[in-house]
Image 1 (spheres, rainbow, N blue to C red):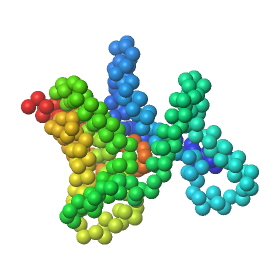
Image 2 (cartoon, helix red, strand yellow):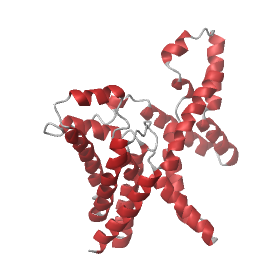
Image 3 (cartoon, rainbow, N blue to C red):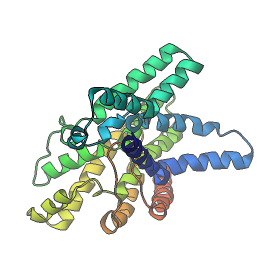
Image 4 (spheres, rainbow, N blue to C red):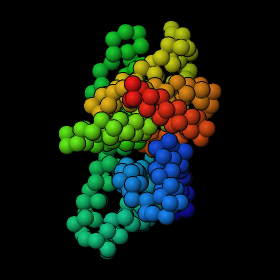
Length: 299
């Protein structure tokens, strides 16, 4: 029981990465500005709801699955003890308490929908890393397979899915209210959601993967170019339906600044979490990206 609780605590500690995520800092700035002005931070509510929805992915994971199967199988547990451990893992799950709260304060139907959604997310995140994005074909050329692998890595962090939801919201906004200024802001938000990943391009590569880079017949700049190309492809797909010029300007600025921490700092990341960057570089990405995107938008 203590080992299970310790594994759950360590896993939840990984959610702290959102504190140094550029998009979360943007939402925190919205809340701070509203509180200083003496008004309710209503403008931050949709973003908080979106962040909370995406955090269901890591929160829905099975606490018992955090213990390696080989170690769990070696524990001298009787059948009754295994059932007790399974019940304890259910109680330690934040999703369980979320469903209990909804059933108690709202309705059983909403709690059931919440539980089904959480279990669906759990079925997604337990997929092995190599199976994510299998539908993405390799690009032609000597960097094609590396670009494919890097796009798959981007699909395994929540930043990309946040940017996707914002892009869909921008498309809906374009359909019902095609205001150019609003589309520019939404496009910059899409790029902002991806910007933190630009600081940790190599963070999801394992030690063996880094060793393979040294064995490939490629220059170092080509390996970095494969990372950049994957980032730019995802960025183009997501900002093109909203406002291409401003979103691309913001994203490329964030990528250029992110090269410094990506190549000089070791920022460890976890899959199915929001990426965590460096506060100084994140501020530079946000400020310079906004300035250049606004200038491009005016011209």
